[in-house]
Length: 303
Image 1 (cartoon, rainbow, N blue to C red):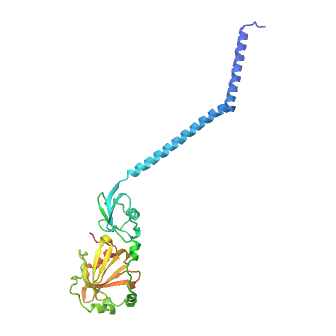
Image 2 (cartoon, rainbow, N blue to C red):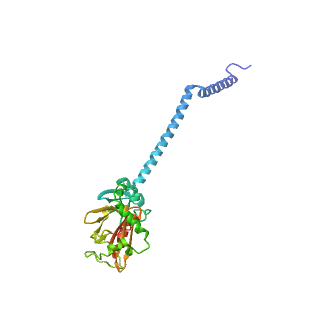
Image 3 (cartoon, rainbow, N blue to C red):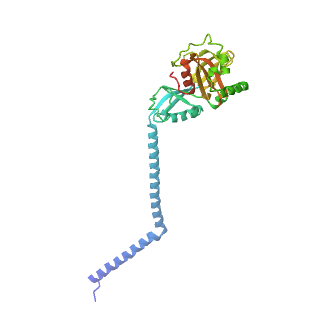
């Protein structure tokens, strides 16, 4: 039997205390898992982590947005002037966007539909897929836009009913040369007008700076053609009045040389959807015929 205070008692005491510590450790572990107070601490830690993730996500989104804005702002643009219907519009547009995109922007500015627009910059812009950079658009340049709204087109004065009937008869005999047809011959028989501009056959010239004048209309009255490019209008003037026709509303232009006077043409400007709406003009100088057609139908002459 060991004596009190011996080495054996001391070892037993250490073992007992170690066991007690293990029990207390297990209780603490259980308490941390099961007790609500400790659970709140764990939840708070998890919420804090989630919040950090959310904050990080927001920061990432803000960073992405900022980068997009910076990328947008860093796009090279050109500031230039667009002129339509005597009005000036200051435009700032990316040079790597296409001419078609610019037309859409112009529609937003002016209300002029894209389908009615003709964009003029160093001549007619025919390829809408070209970028402004490819078109050499730079700061300070001027662009012309020609075109008429649907309201302008609807204002075109239709020909009188009697004229429509006569045109239909003429159309039926279209295989015969124009100068031989009865309705045209009666005007041609009046002879070459004294004040008509000189005609030159087998030659092409751009439109003169003055109206093309001294010609006859189907009634034998004097008529002149004035091209108002900035307004996109053709002015057909007679002694009685001047008809201002939006060029976008003109459907077709035909012409035929006059036999025996090939330096002059008979020309018809079709104002409506059918051939019956043609406005006939006689003794048009031959050298201007192609320029008249190109200007009205879209192949614009240089300014």
